[in-house]
Amino acid sequence: MRAGMLMPMPSTLRYVVFEQDGAFVAQCLDVDVASEGDTEDDALAALKEALELYFEDGVTPADTPKAMRFGELAIRA
Image (cartoon, rainbow, N blue to C red):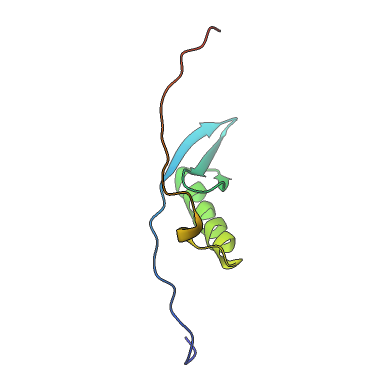
């Protein structure tokens, strides 16, 4: 690391991984970023890289929504 550069603070973001159409999808629950891979580990590695690129554009985790609510809905299908 070069002198004068600040080391970024690590941030913890929540994610979910699921299988879809023969691939694993890793989706961040805190920002709208998702990736896929052949395995869960591949999907998570791709998500980590995608999130690092997302935040490289000057967005910080502090800019993300603070209050989120999760729930379930029953539908007729």
